[in-house]
Length: 80
Image 1: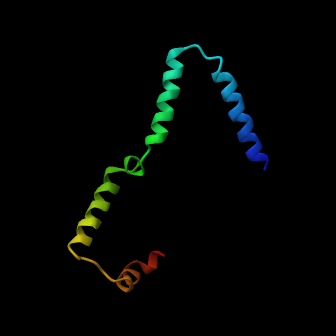
Image 2 (image 1 turned 90 degrees about the horizontal axis):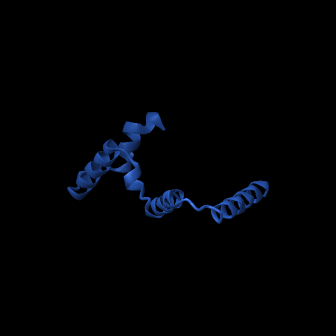
């Protein structure tokens, strides 16, 4: 509950401060941050290696190169 109150107070401080800002550059930067947050896609946040691995997995699945769960447990069970 205390954390939620702190968050609400911080939001109010920012809103009050923002209402006094006259610097267009600052306002544009804030606008960019807001725009970026709205467009954020997890795919854009992962590494090229992770993307490559996901694509390979999808290609294998489409080609029906799949292993049953029991095989995966046998191979990777020691890591779980």
